Length: 440
Image (cartoon, rainbow, N blue to C red; front, side):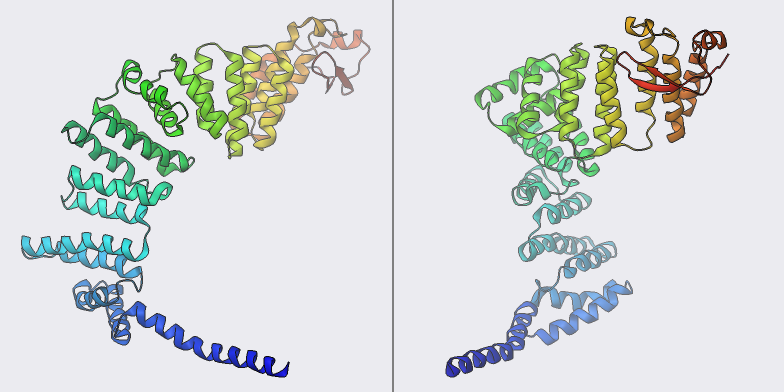
């Protein structure tokens, strides 16, 4: 037993002693054969970069880049600065072009050492355009590589650039209409994966504009001709759903049965809350309030943002009130909206409107003060709205001034043996308490 323990301790001690040697070997491999010289050159060029003496940094940087290209990512970010300076100050076109070649080569080597194609190649695209090295062919290749390798991490900056050159290629008959649509679909997939990120939302707008410029799909009839057959051939392909829905939305093809069919697939199968919002708008335009409300509630359920949830619940509440006259349901949804977005007065303005509108209901008219007392409850809500949200104060004050005229008079209160300040219960669907008061 003691021999075994001694053997284990011996192996452990040898392992610990070997650790610095292993670490040193790893450092040497990263910094090249002559690691000491590489590290020295790295320190020298960094000192010149920090003082923006890029011409002095160049020879030391060049040594590090040649002999230890994978040592640090900073080599590449510093290399951009150095090459930009050298390009700007080149004495002739031949020298300038040589520096441009080096600059563009940096990004390929950086990818080789550190991956992250989705972002790094976007930087390369920027310089290719800046220095007029971009062609339809090389930008298509670069964009496809970035998306294939980077997937949802592909830079938002690159997406509209890639599609712009794809459109140019299509117009020059370098790629087919089908290929252009496939590129559009792959871009939309990345945008959808980054829903909620403003950079990708902006990219989506630019890509949609490029699609319109292509002349490929300009009307809903074009959609029927070019895209619906793709959907029918691949009804389970989620990429086709996203492509088709995006194009139909941009062209406002809301009356097409495919718009709602595919939209509901996106909502139910993929949890796409943005599709639910778009469907709600489409159903509202078609006066299909029940379906619009259903989509608003699904969108709220699936949205990751509480403020957006609140706004969707409030919109659903407004439709319940205006389209379906379902006062109780409308109030429930308005309260839900208020709970998700503190200090927001809009839901309470709506509840006040619901109370005021209830004055025409038979169950309210049969109460002791008839329809007049509901305006006390309505004013309570308007007061609450402006007390928590100054932005609605003006609107709330207008409503208060308007409905004060309809509240019970002093004679009404005396006739029903009521006293100012005491609690008054309102039944019907409302089931709320208010205070007896006189405004006129």
